Length: 251
Image (cartoon, rainbow, N blue to C red; front, top):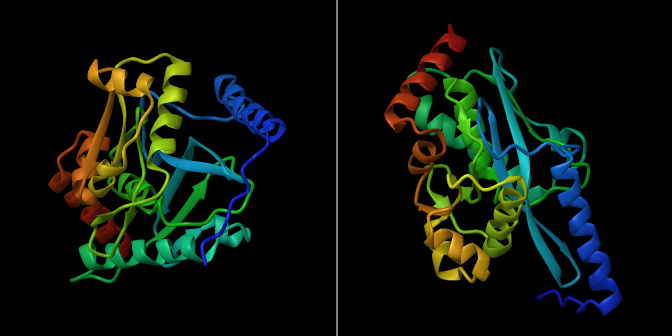
């Protein structure tokens, strides 16, 4: 049965908009740490949608990954803290399947990895951040930094294919808004599943920025297309670096 959302009253809508502005203030004041420039190993801007009744807005969320020698596998810090839903947990297991399929045909998959949604204190569910989580892991293993001016959304399957997600317009507009508040430099953008391009119904401000080359929307089909955009490094070079690190972990 489809859940019926209550349309917010005028008073409720004003309250939700105030909440949205408060999040923006935290980002601008850097009490909520979101980078939109520079590069960082193991750190990626994922895209989340906040939904209250029938009111929804998107904002970036910092996702970090650390990897080190060991046999613990992937530890989802949200799940360890009882803040992860079943679908998000499923996404973590899918990432393990991808890493095994891609890199453990000749050696065991031996690593320890922690994934965290930084400064997030509520329940997280859904698998739309699984590609972002995987980019963070690949970055940490390869020691290739991720561009913080590019945010990403999309779920991933065990073969590395990017799958469509919901809330694509809110997610794009949310990252654009944050970049605009911090001062657009013209190199910012988002990566989305190629299937979601038919869902785009963006505001005029975002459309104009895209037309003028001030903001960019990349549609991708698989994780390796995405890794080249978000790192600027050829996929094969990233693969080689990841394989080398995993071989060292296994020795």
